[in-house]
Image: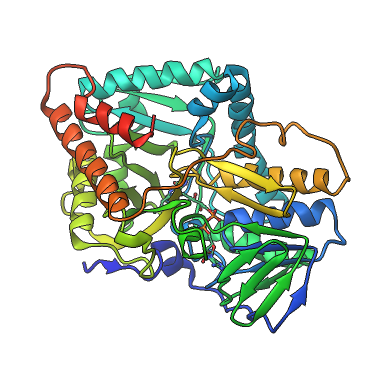
Length: 463
Ligand SMILES: Cc1cc2nc3c(=O)[nH]c(=O)nc-3n(C[C@H](O)[C@H](O)[C@H](O)COP(=O)(O)OP(=O)(O)OC[C@H]3O[C@@H](n4cnc5c(N)ncnc54)[C@H](O)[C@@H]3O)c2cc1C
């Protein structure tokens, strides 16, 4: 079987790219201008329009809605948020517990809105299963499990090797942690359904309209300028392409493969009837889902970062990355050694210097943004959008502070990334260190995390 490489993503190969929407026809005015038509931009348009139906909202999208990570991800709708532990240090444990609780609720919110808007995104609420493969990973798994409980997750379960196998028979798994706060979904069905829902509400979406520069009250494109009191930047991994923002968030690559549909006999061996999203405790971790049509879609780091923050090639990934992901697949499920890989692709996520997701509205300029989700944006974008809605309503005098506007990730400031070549060198060294640490841990009888990974975490500011 030949593997299709790129073409945005497997999810688009399945669904087809929708008919393009008209570009911006010229200069125009709006109440709110949203730059970027991924989950962040579209959810924000959705909640603002629902709250204030007469608002004139314009979304400007460089390519088409869902071109970015929102149309390429692993479909883990789950309660993880980048930076929670740091927010606990900065704002106290209780503030971080509130943030975690908001994320737990967000999983249900996305499921409920999809049902209300009749967006069929193949959602299956089977929770999240994270497995450990070796003694060092098991220690990290137990720490991770205890940490999650300390943030108020009462319904999480720590499973031994046998209980793990009863869910998914991952070769060599020595234990796992399962939480009900997660669901599997089809990323493109969500983003295209959301774009249609937003349009049906009366929001204007212009595609093929790249914004070159954002200034207070202005979004400048080659076709004209949108003037609006609020300009919201929702460009995640593509943010460095905007004027003056090269070092704001680092575009980190992540790649995926999808197998051909697997036969019933194979599923009888593997299990996975609960269709949990599946991850592991490696430093260079993997993530996977059992799709609605019975494939395995599995992802991990490819080339993590391109020199000069270059972003995209329509989803192509390197042959070596496809081999590496196939190796992980076969390590997890040895019976898949001969399985065909139907598709491989990649996308970019946004990584802030301190690895903390943020949502901000600068009340003095009307400029807002949300992102830096690292690898956890499918649910977090929804929380960010509802928060942006509340911040705008507060700023325009329609409401006061809310439970969302007072969460610790709101208006968080972070320093920029280092200039090149330090940025390129730093990220490549970091991931080389993680890969080496994973390799050493997989053959080590001791249960301690490899010192190389600890050093990498300290230097990178990741933990
Ligand atoms: C391979 C991969 C797997 C992932 N798996 C998961 C997962 O399983 N679970 C999870 O929680 N998270 C996952 N993520 C992360 C998650 O997909 C993202 O955090 C989320 O989709 C971010 O949404 P967004 O709208 O902020 O950004 P994006 O979806 O990247 O959207 C940004 C949009 O802005 C547009 N744009 C950029 N610049 C401009 C400009 N100048 N003018 C106009 N438009 C512009 C882009 O074309 C794009 O459509 C994954 C990411 C990748 C890449």
